[in-house]
Image (cartoon, rainbow, N blue to C red):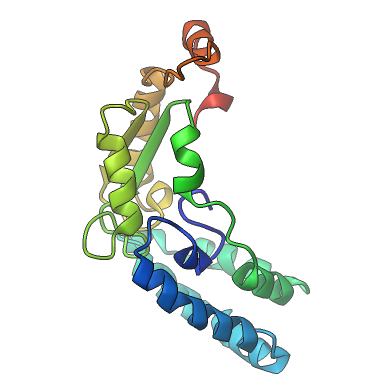
Length: 206
């Protein structure tokens, strides 16, 4: 997950997160990892989680557009859970390495970046006391030294491309038609050459 991590363990490592939260999170994740090694307990929890009713409630909590949470979406989320290896994947994702955090790689990205964020996102909020990543990305977009990074807010929750597809698609089309230039990396001619040669869709980051 390019925004934060493959799981919430980024709370223990990311420089974006306050030190006291990182220290407090470490023993909690240690306990969670230990519990997830108890197979009967994990099987019981997974069976209770992978139900149409539970998934529906979770999706309704992260979507603004209630009409988007239909049977097709719910079934699409549930279908992978029926795979014989689903439980192992579920455990591996929760207990594995969260991967790189945005603050580790985004400052070195030189291609144009468009951030589209739901104003009603409660998972990674854009505003408020707990908006650590929201604040980080907003500050990047407001930083005059990083004009290649821009931010668009849309009325949506955690999944704006599905929650408000028309607004997101229109913004993407407008941005693609006139994206900002590549960031200039002093001592490197590649970004200048990229800007002069034009944009390749493979070079863009959303």
